[in-house]
Length: 97
Image (spheres, rainbow, N blue to C red):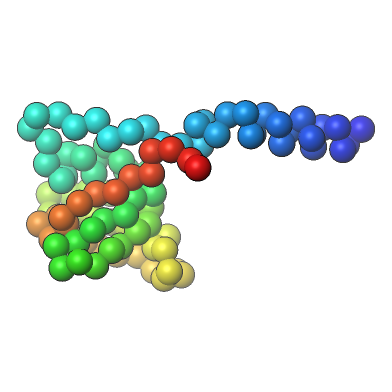
């Protein structure tokens, strides 16, 4: 009986992969890096810096000048405060494979 429930659960998860993807980025005419980030608070993002560096993690908060990322990829138990003016691009996963 437990095996049947497990198989049913797997089938449900596989049938709705889009339920685990984030909403796509919807740009508005007057958007800035800050406004795009504000709509992604609570989501996983990757920030591409003007220097070429990439910083990925969960976006916690956006202020006038900084973005706070937690749960950084490849940096266990680390947070980051990123200068908004140093960000070249915001990468958001919008669909699963």
